Length: 381
Ligand SMILES: Nc1nc2c(ncn2[C@@H]2O[C@H](COP(=O)(O)OP(=O)(O)OP(=O)(O)O)[C@@H](O)[C@H]2O)c(=O)[nH]1
Image 1 (cartoon, rainbow, N blue to C red):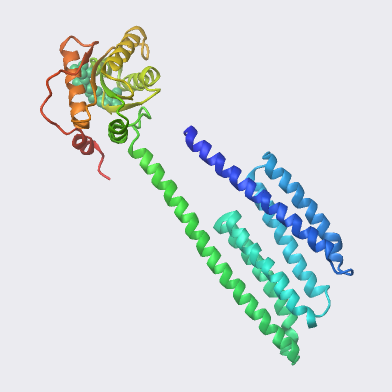
Image 2 (cartoon, rainbow, N blue to C red):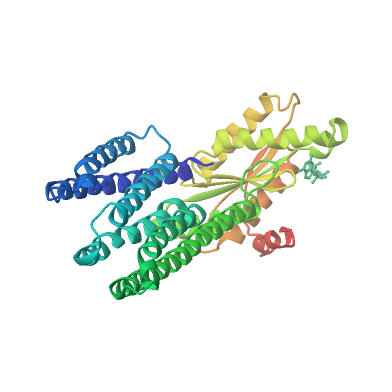
């Protein structure tokens, strides 16, 4: 994975860690305030809330410290919240006073927490795990409410009106579950589609053998950078590189060695020429080097240095040389023109006996679209 993508992912993880840390601090504050203003006989709050408060405090430190895996902490935080919310709900039904006047405080004060649990589970855990937590929370809550409303069936009118309240609350929870789950599914599918598109996009512009940009990637880079060139008026040069007598290498040493030579030459070009620009595999044994910021003189100098390195460095154990054609981009003439002139420079280098660097001729070649060639070279999808 490229460094820029790693940085992006790490920034996203940090963002999530800090968001959960803020949520944990808020949970601590809620527990503390509830504990301060608790009913004197409410043992659940008196004993449970200080414990929960400490656990959320510890989670907050772990989140900020960053040592424990984020996914583990997410599962832990949602599970903890589920335990607190559902056990408090069970306490209301089983241990608490009979509903009477307490029904409305129970409904307004506690079912919102079940709703928040459902939403949080989807946000933090994604569709599948979120759905599991939401279904457990909803079923548990519905079971408790059904148990408390059973006496309605044997003719307790007060319990029947309670049952209606519970029914409305659970319909609301069901709607929340449906909305949040479909929203999360949409989010997850959108992210997956974006990730797939990015992979395809990368494959589309990358040469399989060398992992350098391919011809399409080089054209895209040129189009992007020549836009900048006209705006900033900085020069841009391209160098077309062709391996001398490459067919012989394949013929004498086999295609695997040929592949290795191509890969090593790509690495050497990237090392010498590619730090500030792009090295692409233009086609079989041809490479294109694009250097924003270099005028023709600088590009010729760099190409000569690279030619010299190749001549004096065994590549895959073989003596390999290459020919170089250099041209500077002309804002008036466009991309096809600079590519044609680099091609003419390369032809000149080969005519001069190969293992040579040559500049593009002064006279312009007839117009020819490299971009059309590049699209013809793309495999049919
Ligand atoms: N090993 C290997 N060979 C390839 C690959 N792509 C193209 N080739 C071969 O590269 C050779 C290129 O041949 P030519 O274009 O005649 O180039 P050359 O032999 O260097 O001749 P000059 O350019 O005139 O010096 C062909 O034999 C192709 O089959 C590849 O990915 N791997």
